[in-house]
Image 1 (cartoon, rainbow, N blue to C red):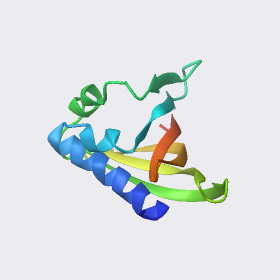
Image 2 (image 1 turned 60 degrees about the vertical axis):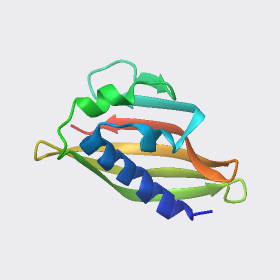
Image 3 (image 1 turned 90 degrees about the vertical axis):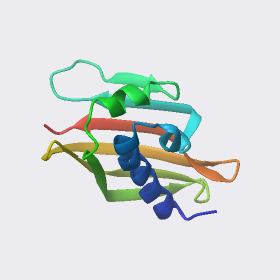
Image 4 (image 1 turned 90 degrees about the horizontal axis):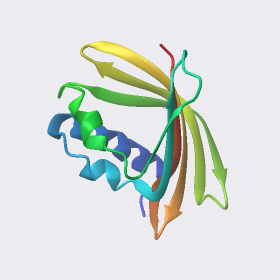
Length: 126
């Protein structure tokens, strides 16, 4: 099994490939079937909630093939004998040459011998 840091890097590579191909298959491979996500920005009362079945293809099609996501981990908390990770960090998305920053919180866990994204919370900075 890959170590967690490699998996997180591969997850972002899958997103960046998805922006080019508009195919969400590789992204979905990282997600638990029990996945829940929350997305928000200032000015809204409640975050948008989505799950494993949300339409990633529509998301990918909103952006051109030069869109790129990267991340910086601020803190990592290992839980349950290192079979569960809580990650807090900053995500930078370059969209049409402009950076867009968000704070991210991910919960990853081992499912059937593979790291899977269980939950994410994304709060846009700008």
